[in-house]
Image 1: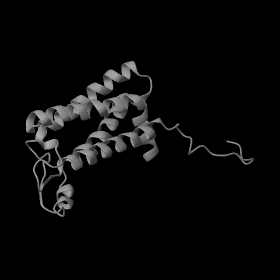
Image 2: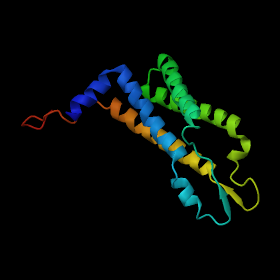
Image 3: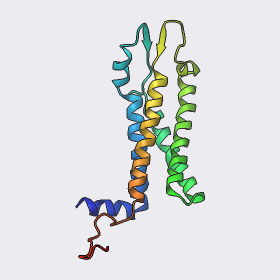
Image 4: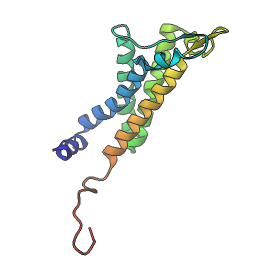
Length: 162
């Protein structure tokens, strides 16, 4: 059943694009909104500050990330033959769009790890975690979708040849 579902996703351009979008957006946005970074940051000596994406105020940033990724993927897919490159370009476009909109909304001071003496800003760490999670999720899904179909399920013959 899982093999049939995966084959349907691979065969459908819309389904595979949506899967690639979700494989980037979900880890990226989760890392930007999770309380895990704040829990770890409370252990930092001195004062700590953090900015995270919350609901419903973060919906415009989420929409911008999703729209930028989709536009970047569609535009790059027309120019670039490699689906892997199209995914990396789309990821980069989404991250750049997030950076521009986040800076416009919150200001450039949110990007400084030490805005004042004795104060640690956790957002750069949160952002780095989000970028790594997004790119890894996207790379894993792109590799899965690009894998040869039926390579692992092809029966071997009795003499060892496939």
